[in-house]
Each structure stands twice: as C-alpha cells, then as structure tokens.
Amino acid sequence: MLRFFTAGESHGPALTAIIDGLPAGLQILTDAINKDLARRQTGYGRGKRMEIEKDQVEILSGIRFGKTLGSPVTLLIHNLDWPNWALKMSAAPLKKIQGIPITEPRPGHADLAGAIKYDHRDLRNVLERASARETTTRVAIGAVCRAFLATFGIRILSYVTEIGGIPIPVKSRSLDARFRLAEKSDLRCPCPDTEKKIKALIDACRKKGDSLGGIFEVVATGLPVGLGSYAQWDTRLDGRIAQAVMSIQAIKGVEIGMGFDSARQSGSRVHDELFYSKGRQFYHKTNNAGGIEGGMSNGEPIVVRAAMKPIATLYSPLCSVDINTKKSVKAAVERSDICRVPSAAVIGEAMVAIELSKIMLEKFGSDSMKEIVRNYKAYIVYSKAF
Image 1: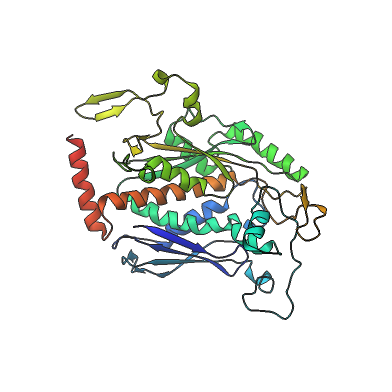
Image 2: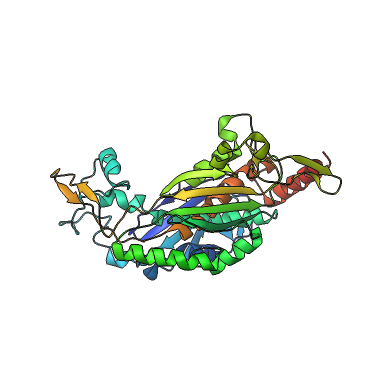
C-alpha cells in the first residue's frame, strides 16, 4: 500500500517526506522533482517568500543509482529562510523565548481552532504547520508518483479556469493547447487576453491589502478502465480523488466532470452515450462524467475541478479577538501572497498523481516495476478483447 507522511514547519530548518510502498525498480531523478518544485513556486501574485526559497530536493533513502529499492524513500527540502528564524523556531529550550507571541487569530485560518484544540497560547505554534508551505513536500511526492504513472502513458495536466470571478475561456482549445499555454503563463492561464485582466485585478487587490481565490482544473489522461470500485464507499475513485484534492489548504469545493452543473440539466444532457467500433472498442463522444462512472475510471480523461478561497492573511486585516485579553483587535498579518491559485493547480496535479498511483498499485501489484508492468499489459490485452 502506497502511503506518505510529511513533516516540518514553514520556517523550520527543512521539510521532509517519507514515501512507503513504492515498487522497486522505478527510476527517479532529482531534476524531475526539482522541476515540479519550481513550477509550484511560480505564479503572479506570490509574495516575498518565493523570492527567498529555491526549493531543491535531497534524497536520503530508498533510492540507489537512480532507482527505487522497494524500501521507504525519504525526501528533504531545506528552508533557505531558516537562518532568519533559527532562534524564533528553536527546537532546543531557551532561557528567553524569541519573538512576540501571536494572539490575534486570522478569520478563515487554522489559528483559533488549532489553538483551542492543542492548547496553544502562541498562534505561531499552529500557523507554522497549517501553512501551505507544507505542500512543497506533497509536490515532491507527486513528482515521484508522476514518474510511476508515466511508465504507463498516464499524464497529469492542469490550468486555471477562473480567478477573482473572471472566467478564463478554455473550451475552444484542445487539452494539449490549454496545458502548453498554461505552462508559459505565470497565472497558468490558457488565454493571454484574459490574463491581462486578471493581473490588473491582482494588482488592485495588492494595493488594497486584499486577496483573491479562483478555480483550477486537473486532467489525467491515458488511464485504463476499471480503477477504483463500486463495492465499498471508500474504494470509489471519485471519492478518493475528491478527498485528496480537498485536503489542499484553502480548497473549498471539488467537482468531477460536469460537477454541480449536472444537477441543473436533464439526464439526457448529462449522461455520456456509449458507442463501439472494432478499432476503438467501447467509447464515449462526450465526457460529462469526467472519466469516472460508478466510482471507477471509464477510459476517458479524468477531469477534476477545484475551488480555492482567497488566502486568509490580508494586509488590510479583518476584525478578530485577542485570545488572551478577549478584546477586539485586527487579525495578525503573516507574510503571504495575494493570489495562490496557479501554484494550487500544480499541487492539485500532485495530489491526483498520488491517488492514482495508489490505485494503480492496488490493482496491478506493488513489489517491483517488472511485475506491475507485466500485470498491466495483461489487463490491457484482456480489456481490449472484452
């Protein structure tokens, strides 16, 4: 079973991840991981932190001569900003605590609930781990899973479809064109004309000390039929993907395929009709289901859409209450971004890659790449002859 754990604080010395359950014989290159880490750091509207950090992965275990051993893989990513926080975030006890305790929780953040849950009187103890900086490790893990999926011709792509209420037209372009344009854009926007409008809106929000959210889409192509199951609630592919994407900080909604729009249409306009030809086998002319029917992949691209709320840190802070004095105050201001939707799309890719890798390993074996490839090829032969 593929599983992972991440550890580390936003301003701690480093972020770490342990991946357990990877098969032996999978080629993993640090350059490929670093490429995705760099993609996560881009985006118009990012803050000063991304000017400091240049995320690079260090592999500490589980890989020899570029290939996995079947044992746990440990990844390490140093925080370059750590020297500036070494005393404020010291693991060792100090005679005098460095830094002023944060006591003004930010509306929309983990600050207050986390402080009550863990009995903290300094909100930094909460925000350091609740920070989206944690997703750095998830992107690194996703890059490893992407290498696994690529063995089977499975691709994971993303692009932004809306920021700050401004929709980005994407339907007129092919999937490859959307992704190609998104990779060239620092908003992951597949429409250059709309990009200019959104950048102007981000600039206006920056001046007001406000923040913006938006919507991104992740698409997975090349998947076989039959990943996931209808047999139990927790084996359904759409449920597992939705949970994985929803776990990203600030994500408040996830759709598969038509999503909520399918509730506004009649059945004849929602369900994808089936066709058959000898060369193509079973296929659909539409993909309103987003590649998943009955909790299982149906052979079409899996389409996942996620809504990200505006970032909770505002440079013109909202009203709050001091957790000690109980007096009305303005919320704390922590160094942050104005818009993080483009980087969230890259994180979304990682989470989809992780969940699809789990399900592929469950279906085709998990000990060695040779075994998995052999089982996969046999299944493809079977499914094409069905």
